[in-house]
Image 1: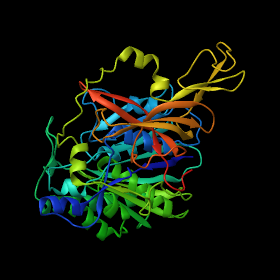
Image 2 (image 1 turned 120 degrees about the horizontal axis):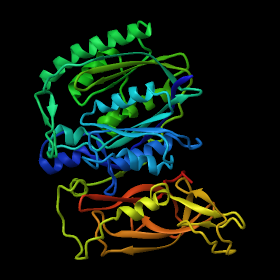
Image 3 (image 1 turned 180 degrees about the horizontal axis):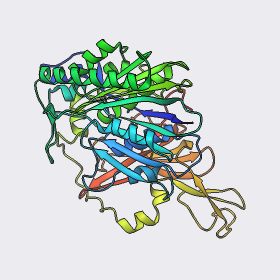
Image 4 (image 1 turned 90 degrees about the horizontal axis):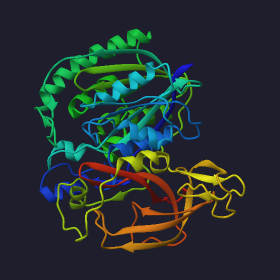
Length: 456
């Protein structure tokens, strides 16, 4: 059966308490917090983490990738290709971008649901706004991935409807860092009528009078609240702990709702952005619980730290030479290693090599290697060093040597770590990150990340 086979969500561990903004600026909300991407994360990194979770445990197949984001890394270049490569999906299958609006989230959802081939809709965004704005305080950073194809689905598409209306509610011109937002009462009034029309049509298309569960997403907070109240949407921890996450918001909220749903129930998914889209899903089995919940451990950061990570507060960097600009030919030749973190394993003795080798370092066998994906491997820090001079938006940097449980040793950067708390023997996992950005090029590779208590 064609349907939604898997969901994957990713919410960064860092949180900016809204009270921090209020304390710094003297105004704004004082409760809750927003999710914040780490200093080495962008929308591509968030997308990779979410997609890894959606595809976990599945054999690599020719899977299409549809990336929906309103905060793409590149304005002219397909961002989805890096995600496709990081998932080690080979060269078969398409990788396409959808963007310019949070509405691209529902666009990718519907396109993936209608595709005759296995397709993952990957939704990711970093939301920001002017200092003191609602976009800054109530926005959030996250990724979500929804895999569609044939098999034993979590849910199937029962009905859908879309309504489009041209009106200036919010907009951002090319090159502008933040959106301009019209007075909320105007947008809320327009959205109320559009949502009503889309919902009535979608329910009729599905042949149901009302849905058992409701998910509402919109960049217009007043419109989302009004629609949610009218349709009976339950309060979500996402509002207080994460914030509105743009194109990713739809996937994040849907995955959370599907984990609580029972077989036989229906879910109404409503997206109000530059129009209104409504989808009715029939639940066939409960989805696995999302990786992050309201109880997930988090790390709070200060408002100056947030501004620094966002590039809005220039701070003195160590006086060191700029990094070399990444070169395309070697990156292309070694794409499976650089993006997919695929090493080699000796067929003769089983030694794992990182990076991949032709000659075994243990038994010296030549050209007897098989590919060994290592991005899901976990390991232990065998030694580390702390560098206070390397340029970084989150100094100091920590470099570690990791011994992997499945074999292999590798030296790499440690991210999301408290340098004073790192110890030999700490457990780590691998995560796809940006090494640096120079001359308009983002250089990606894999870093180690400390495992939280109870994770391994």
